[in-house]
Image 1: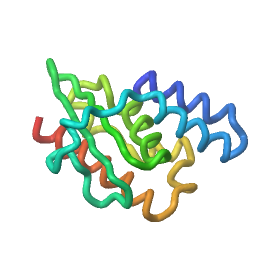
Image 2: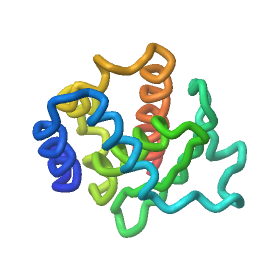
Image 3: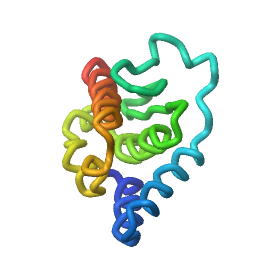
Length: 135
């Protein structure tokens, strides 16, 4: 049920044996994102439950879900990029059908994140699901 963009990162992860290389890839993914405009870094887009500052700006256009986001932590910015690959471009009705835990489990990410980062990742996924459910 993952997007082609997410499948690409799964393939990249399978190619890398070392977790430091995988973390580096996640961080590079985050660095490659366009920064979120300051005008969108407002309380309404801030995600609570994250140890770092996180903003997600979801948009539903023509029934298609996508979001942009940013964090002040490099690894979390990378996690946002991974989630964008998982969700962006899906019909809004399919967003809730994504088993994010299982998909991210394919990367092994959840096994290698601190408890705080895991909580933040869950908070971001919950925000995405809330917006899709309301959309």
